Length: 349
RNA sequence: GCUGGGGUACUCAAGCGGCCAACGAGGGCUGACUGUAAAUCAGCUGGCCUUGUGCCUACGGGGGUUCGAAUCCCUCCCCCAGCA
Image 1 (tube, rainbow, N blue to C red):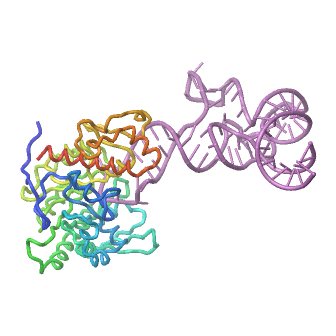
Image 2: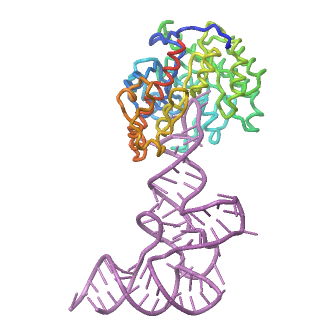
Image 3: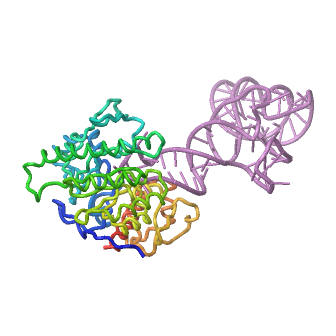
């Protein structure tokens, strides 16, 4: 019998109220790959996630600002959350250098080095027109050398959060409360419970609108991740939303929601969709490229209400389109997967 | 008909006496992907099984040389180019 945790039922943003729990499709470069905004919205998505690092490199936040901001640029009317570039500290570990000031990344396209500081990350996100701005954090991996610096990374993440808040306040000082974007802090700590507790307490002591759990699902076992979520669950501030960054496997979302999490984002529904994988009732996964679907006339999931399943696209069509490399297959499967995750959230509301 | 080039696995294509069941690419099959360096990446892809420094069958067909042939020789069949 899972314990129930006090939680909020919605999140207010300057672009409207968002019902919780909710899942955010990943639109790293400003668009959910292969889908237009109407398709994303119809699948049940309320908020989009875009990335500071990628948009800074291309086309640049100044360009986007000139073009009316990210909402106008990408034609998405709902709220947008921007990740700070913190995840790239982890995912681009081979081409970055961390200093206390910030992180130097080597842009692989141009060969040039770019510096992202907490202040810079705030400025970029502000210029993009983000509705939910994420603090710039230092995310460590699980390799031995990375583990050794977990504590250092937590401390740095905290120092950076203070700098983020200061810069955020400076940037938003002339903005009315109702029109101000939100700022979320991120806690770190790897698989160390003491560090995690310390980090959560620190973030919740700061002037942030939401609390994000970072640094999970980076290669640890599912059991380890669940242990940590269980450990943190009783300690959340009931007045603030909790965002588990990067999670999007259905069973993981269910576990997390049952342990107090309100928000999610993940590349799985869209990346998986483009690669042929689709979730079906029971949280099972289908690989639509498999030869067994070659003559299957049924939809991906009979019980699904998404555009793709309702329209009657057959598994056989998917198998065929994936084989011949038609991107329509990836788009339709992405719609289905996004809807699947949104339905999980809707069931819990 | 003559001269030259060529026929290699599902396809294209390397190899030109032993390290070859045969490079590479495509295709096929399977798998991975959790704040997107990802429409990407990895493995397998002649048959059989007791999965092995294992056995069989294989580089157009047949024959030969050799301890050993996809690789050399003879012959036949087919394709391509040029000339009659």
